[in-house]
Length: 79
Image (cartoon, rainbow, N blue to C red; front, top):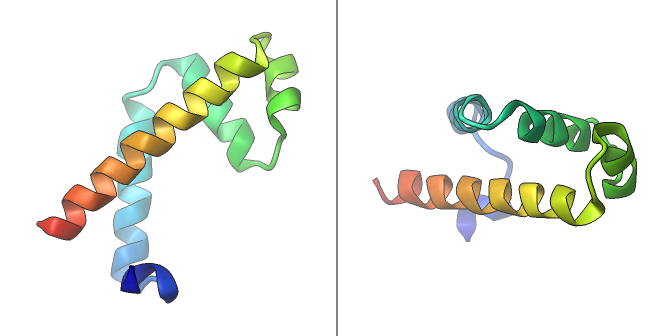
């Protein structure tokens, strides 16, 4: 909770980038594209149109990624 109330240190930010890159490398290419489009600020509707998938599929991919990232961050903070 305290870590969320402040800006990350440079080492924390670097660790997050490493975690994001590792997760993205393990993703299927279409899922990686969905995440990249979201990180670029596209809406779920725009992403669905771009990748020719349903909005539901796009939301599921993003929710799965978010859950995996949260899990990794929790594991890292407990280590």
